[in-house]
Length: 542
Image (cartoon, rainbow, N blue to C red; front, side, top):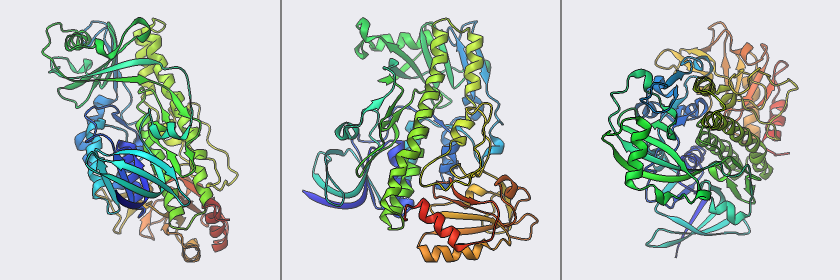
């Protein structure tokens, strides 16, 4: 048997596992990813990439590639309802396309998972400290004195892998979660579903009938645009209690389902594939056991309505990677890893609940409790979810509170209120730059200053630069300090950023490697001791 030593073993090669491998590599951690399937997904599955995930992709340098591969935003923001795509009662509505423009340097996008995984796989395989093996199954996992041992097989050989930690991103039916004995909580299965992917020319539909997602009542189903061209997907269901099963969906049944959804009995259709799945809303009772961590669908399963599941999982990986790296590099205490569940599980639970709320709109329409007009208004309104995807915040031992209250918007699902309060995502503010950071339009976002390290932002001339340099040298923590001027006297300029971050002229804010504020001094004298104390708290060093 071959043997291999790595710092982290990632089980599962979907978007979440790939994100974990990419981010761990950015932190210099040796990683092996194993995926039992021979290649990336052939089904679209998830499609929506939220604003926060696009910000992570911006840091990875893949936004342009994702945009080239994805669909026009004008189409993805549209939702339709009706008896069929061709019926007289079909109505369509779209969310305001510029709603999220001031809140981020990027925006939500639609790129189907089968295309996205190709992009992420290429990036992971190019990472210097990551190895990716498809067609490889983990067949055994056990604890050791200082880590874990896993056996993997690829059909030709077996390998013993010794790792310090394991990230299980092996999906909703996670074998790792089952082995760990971690339970899941949530309502009973909401539906036994079938996805029928097909190719057809629907160009005869006028623009007001084209939407990325349409909910139809005759027969009850949903139609999704996959590539903005000929590829589409019908999602329908069956009832096991009534004797239904995936075997019922013969080629003819699938063909009839597609033609019924479009409303054209003789439509030329090529059925590409059929995939059964369960519509669920579940959260694991814990995200960690010993040296093994659950991420993505292994930890939480959202309904597909809202498009939150994949994004929540990618942010799991983003949160966990820097913590694993800090412990493995010896700059953090092991208790830092306990904050992964503390921080991510409440966010996952809220995300799953909101996805369930979205699904209930459709259920109520199908049951006749909502008219089509009421349903489309509610569905289109729920497409705006920046309060959920940008406004979430962490409360844990890895955050130093500053005593300020959290924003309380009237609609915390839709409305995002920027704040640099500790625990929140660092707000986006456009800066002008005369240096190397300048973007193609002469601007740079505050988010572009962040990286796989701690970042201190402070007004120019505050004196915090020297304190940060001394704290970094003393602590051994990778930290970069950046000054931003209000009047153009420095390299980076914004007349409003300090106010938006809640800072006076002598203030400073310390941002964690995952882009969330860890500590803030709104005013006061620069202090190496204050920074060291903050780092010790965040990194569980004291």
